[in-house]
Length: 369
Ligand SMILES: *Cc1c(COP(=O)(O)O)cnc(C)c1O
Image 1 (cartoon, helix red, strand yellow):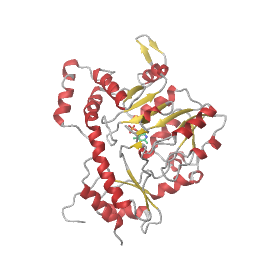
Image 2 (tube, protein in one colour; image 1 turned 60 degrees about the vertical axis):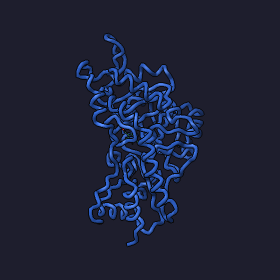
Image 3 (cartoon, protein in one colour; image 1 turned 90 degrees about the horizontal axis):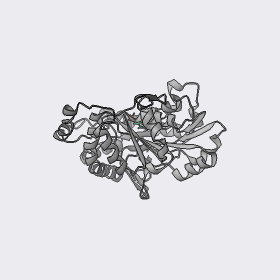
Image 4 (cartoon, protein in one colour; image 1 turned 120 degrees about the vertical axis):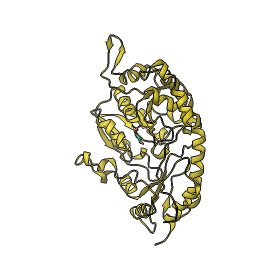
């Protein structure tokens, strides 16, 4: 390893200046109002609604709970079609609602749910489709929603990776019946832990807002079997501070992304995600697929690790190969997802990653042994 070179982590949380956050939370010592939809909660909901161009938005304590409760709000039953090429949360949210996930394969270029393989998975038990805008690659929303409409299915997107993105000027939150966003510490925009559900039908408000507060509608009416999904005031204050800098952070991520592309895009055996000019991206992740490259994914993972450069096999294994779902699914049924999960590596990506570090990372990848 180069003398004096520092370890490079795969991600690093964005944080506002300390004084700004400290000033922000000071009033909480006067009000003693720490959670339960306080002033910061209401303010962040308004600000995010604007930023995401969202028709309706409800904050949650984390993205996973937001997704679980969004699925519950739509009263789904039976089977839900989803992708195995995602984070554990997507499938677990389906299963924890008592629903049966049915895995569709992904597209070989952007790794989102393949609409061409979707329709044959629909049965008379199917009630919804839960696609994922994986790595911020926006799904084939038009095709997916055309199929959903034809069969009377709900579409609820896992948009955890797609914060603030637009497609042809339309906010990513405008697609489907609802979308879940995650504001976890490692995401492009964070509230330490946090999340939101954006939904199209204003009539859903009392379901979504009710479920996150034990189903309590008013002092004497508990109308839903809800849980506790409330975002607290310290989280919301962090969000208000971080939101001011998010465009700037995305701008810095873009420079990192462009440096990676400059170094890696034309290398035989290295595949990067397509760069759709219609999409305003957030540069959340830097996935690289190695196919026909002199070194395989696991070798590159180890070589980078030897240089104290930490990457993630994100997503490996596919969800349908998880131990907890053993004997229930066959990863061979989604061959593209299975193959990509063995070939993909997400490289370090965060706003303050120095471009010299990007070069160091690319040098190790491209170096011949
Ligand atoms: C982060 C993430 C989630 C879960 O969000 P949390 O805020 O961590 O609960 C769900 N799905 C995907 C694809 C994610 O990346």
